[in-house]
Image 1 (cartoon, rainbow, N blue to C red):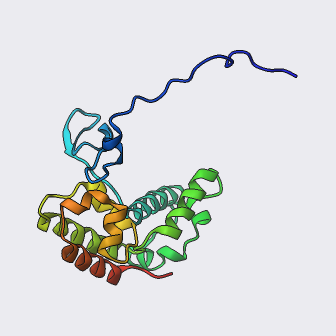
Image 2: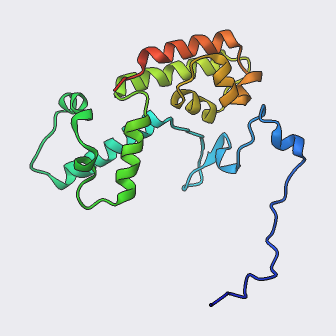
Length: 190
């Protein structure tokens, strides 16, 4: 029996932890440096952080794949209106193409299953609702919190605050319930 001796007797490093109370207190949003509100682009310019909900990510990936497919099939021309109507009819396998990898197929399937808002008009409306909601909150919401509100299907304010604890100090239950009710109106059932 071959047993590697390189790992025997070697202690693994433990992650440096903060105070246990800090770890358990989820009421304050503690994200890494990649979630700072001001980001530096590749060209050195500053821009605001953008966090996408699953519906927005789905639309962006599908748009990029459609554009790539159109470049490969220069002979065919698409009408944008027809494309928006037929968006869900295009199978993920057809859109990604036969030469795409398994991860792309799994990503598209995941986004198709879990995106709440399937068409671009409802996604744009929801983004405006979330932005207006953030402006009306007592403290501005982080883009990550807005993306989570747009992704999760919370039934009531209590559920939303349990899944996103940092909301508890920023918005009232009445405001949050009103937003969740409004979001449900634009949800695509399929």
